[in-house]
Image 1: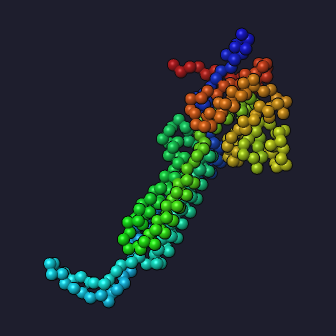
Image 2 (image 1 turned 90 degrees about the vertical axis):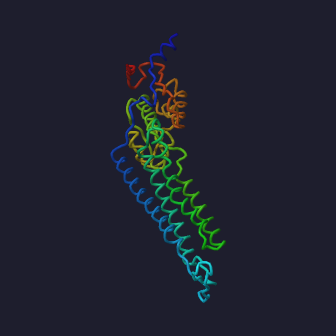
Image 3 (image 1 turned 60 degrees about the vertical axis):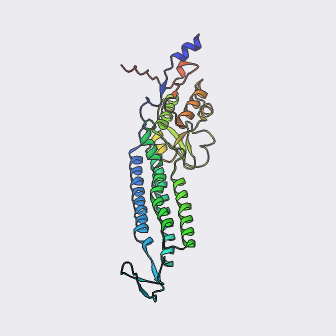
Length: 308
């Protein structure tokens, strides 16, 4: 009975209704810069595609110009026999170089765009924006390659060897650029908010620690992952994300024990909820910490009144 009363006294909040996480002004500025650079690179990739379609693929030279003229008896028009149009070798080499340049521009833009999304993610609740913002690199890669590859295979002046080589190179580079452009584990506002909410509830404030070489941020500076000899950084969760540490460690319970701090009795449930939110769930409840002794709670959080 006492256990039920203890658990019922701890309010639960969902990742969707928790106070929204916001990037630091510096992270926001950096993300905007990355996106502008990516947009410029993608613009030039598409310009390169247009150059390939409307100029390079139209290049041809004529062989057999010593052919003779004959008159078509049905139309009365002259035709030249023995003249053949071929795709010049210089244009073929230039086309291969252009395909590589388009891929480099597309891939570099995608890498910068994904970095921007780590610093300033979209909300998972806005499904269309979340999908487009996180997969835009793959979309741009398809736009920058597909029409050009199609026109290569439709070109009538290339010989079979040129067409096969250019087509295969175009397809391989297109697939490579599209795969690199896909974000297989995109960050979200909900994920960052859930981590931030967890930190505040178990520590009493939004303050975490990390080191330059790590991949996550921590709740205690005495653990082995932090005591690596590198400089220990301290700041908010937003500052940790700006520094390239996008996640709270899921080993926070053992870290709390290591530093002699109280550990929530339901830490396993909190970890399960955080995993689900990171995997994209938008309706998962983030349990409030349940403390063996109410005095262990580092912060008192009132339950939000239900919406009328």
